[in-house]
Length: 139
Image 1: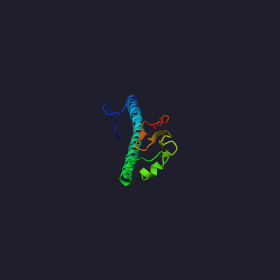
Image 2 (image 1 turned 180 degrees about the horizontal axis):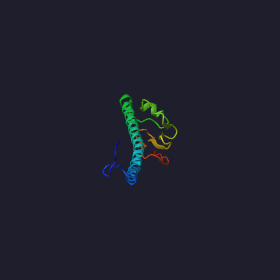
Image 3 (image 1 turned 180 degrees about the vertical axis):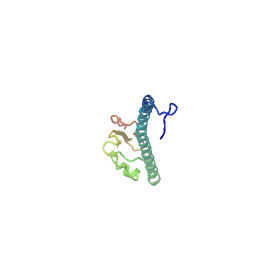
Image 4 (image 1 turned 90 degrees about the horizontal axis):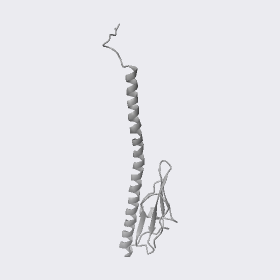
């Protein structure tokens, strides 16, 4: 049988409560930062996708330049995504009437960009500021 003396005792209730409070404070500061990483990761994926779209549009124009001798970009009303990208992710959408490129995030929020081409199809622009109303179309 083991005999306890004054030198051999466990933690007091106050010590245990203090440890739990400290762990709770640490968890309260770390967990929100972790969830913010998800939002930042989605924003980076969107920026990468839009950059890939811009690159595909430029490659399309280079192909047109080499085959026809004219540098042109696909019209807004064309089937833009299939022409410049191999596959379209499920949560992305392209509206052929307005040139809106839309992404639905995992939380249900949507972000939009607008693709527009000059009247002579020699310049293009993607409004890379997501959200908001569509920019005015410049002829």
